[in-house]
Image (cartoon, rainbow, N blue to C red; front, side, top):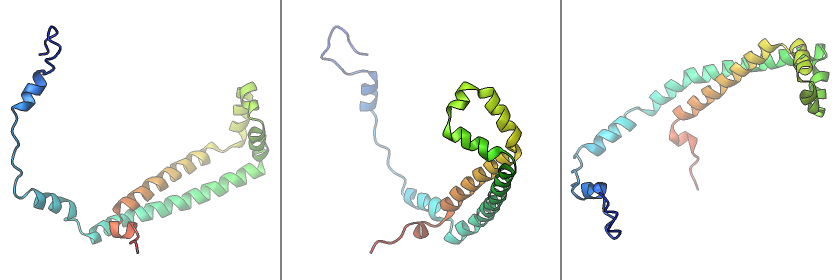
Length: 145
């Protein structure tokens, strides 16, 4: 423990404990075990695991396209585009009369399509991340000339 009466003695219990520790020898097969656990999966196995995520990503992209089209068509048929344009031009409307703006948005925006578009966008992001993580490193980086 540190002695408060002797400021030159800065050694504490932890320093004394670590001073008595010895190095542990590295196991001989450590490198082989680490390489076997990281490289054991072949590139073909990684590519096979990427296919379900590619299909999920394509399905999410298709669903996002359809919901975006339906949402745009629904807003175009109602006064939704005018309301959204008014909010973009004058955001102060939301601060002066938030309840009226929210009520108006609730009437013209189909929230089920917005939620469905958000879920499909999230699935698309997750699928793209999983595809990139399963792609072999040699395909991700381009060789330098």
